[in-house]
Image 1 (tube, rainbow, N blue to C red):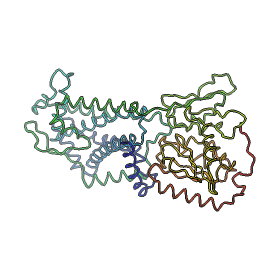
Image 2: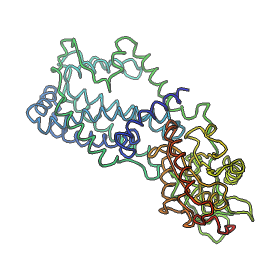
Image 3: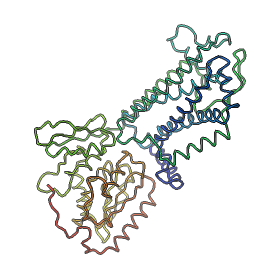
Length: 516
């Protein structure tokens, strides 16, 4: 229920962004890529700040004051960019995490590797505030050291180092610089692990969106530059500090809750989030399986798998083909896109069992053909349409009527183009309508993209030239665009009325081969 509410909310917001920016520039479809973009802004601006930063107790504050006020045109802008890009990175990560949960895309190892990144980002950001050594840094240092003292690992109290100014030395700031540099480097490594199983990972947002975002950050840096609070003074307790609520929402809690309780809550919360993909009621579908009798080692499934879950290895059955496909079950998401890429997944096969080189055990291509035939037999009227959709789109149960039948699968990318040829050439329907997730936001990343390229003849397996493309339509609706979906469907049925029923354009009069 919670996921359904969140998803509906996200899709309504995305509707507005689609109207303003279009699917290509919609920031909610580019959260991961924007996170990478903000990371690099933070790194580049941080390198510039490091050149001028001094690690002395008083010099740390003074060096940043120089950058902010004396070198405002460069150092001040870089400091503000560093601050606001860091805040934006937190926002992108949290929205990305929430959206992946809402869209039910968290049941994989990628979610597991994403949670530690939260710890690294927050720790790196907080350590950066320590280095300023103003009153906010003083508050953070004392509160953080008291939180660390709640752990039984330290022999002496860390908070004692902040009793007086005399106890501090430049080595403290040298340590902070080391931590502040080391954590982003570790974060980069974890980010690489997070995406290294992706085929065609999206690490760069569209250029126009990146430039617009950078311009927004620059404007904000000039209008509201990041500045230091009064210098730290350990002989007094700051009366008021202006927290960065993106990084420090926990600190007010520390004034009310014992540190050990906070640690227990943080650890339990982290473990819960990391184990969430394996918690009920989610049931992981069976991974794709390879049928060596029909696998010719073409490697199309390897090229099309969005998560690099398939690889080619030396043939094990002694056949003439040199290679065979091997599925990594731990990384397979059971999307079926590999099935849609397999040249042997053709519904025209009648002389032998329809068993392609690769398929899903729980969603076999033979069952898809049988369901297509069954749906066709129930249609009547002059504008019969079969809708091929995915399980993550509109609810198919309330789309069917006497003229419209619905066939669904895990992802629309599972549909081989030959199925469209099969429906139209055998006159199982007058038209084929494809739908699924929203454009630019496929649940399995590349399903819509590969489908578009197959239909347009830019990717194998291609739609045959004999197919009348006027009898094919597509609308990527997601869950909430019901009105637009039915409008497009009605328009398509009206278009079918204008086509001559005896037209041989589209291959209806041709004799089909068995395609064994």
